[in-house]
Image (cartoon, rainbow, N blue to C red; front, side):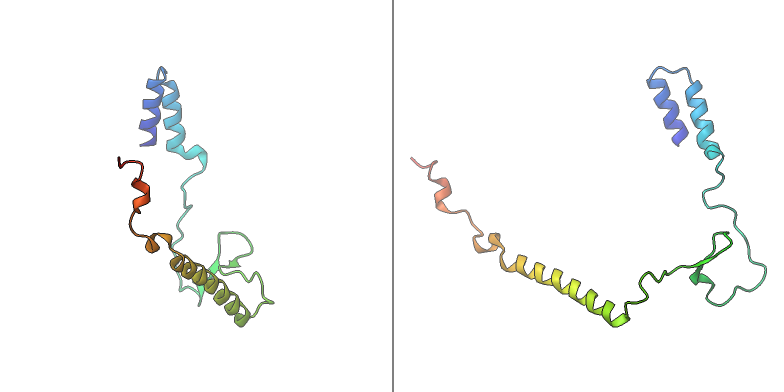
Length: 118
């Protein structure tokens, strides 16, 4: 698809098709990068327990999927920060509902049409 669009763009710009062929060849080969997901390795033995929690991309040091960025913050402190943030946005939404100017005056007043009347 991208190769066809590139060829069409080359023809519109007045090219002779050489640029279109080069672009289509580059797109087809992905500039030598290979497949987007790499090789698929089929396991031949049972996977270890909790294997889905380890990110192993072929480097010598596999790492856990869930990083512990702040191990000094406890779960109750994190829960307090989460509840505080959510309650702030709840209060902000409630203030927006209470101070809704359109609901206080849902019609157009007569004073807006004073210039139209004779």
